Image 1: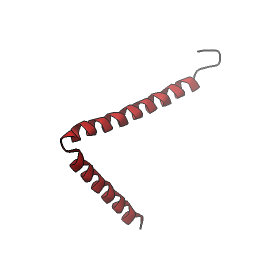
Image 2: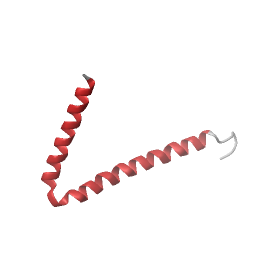
Image 3: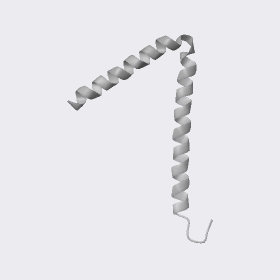
Image 4: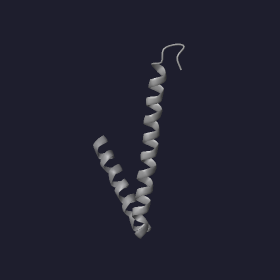
Length: 64
């Protein structure tokens, strides 16, 4: 049952992506780059925050 729901969800995502591609037309590459760039910025910022947090957790008392 979960496999069927997963396939249905992926099919829905495919339909939405195709409709989006048809509606944006020639602007598609720009929107694709914008979405990918935004996701990458969020992921890199999250990774930087995790690294910063792990570095501050390992700092001995009294050190900055």
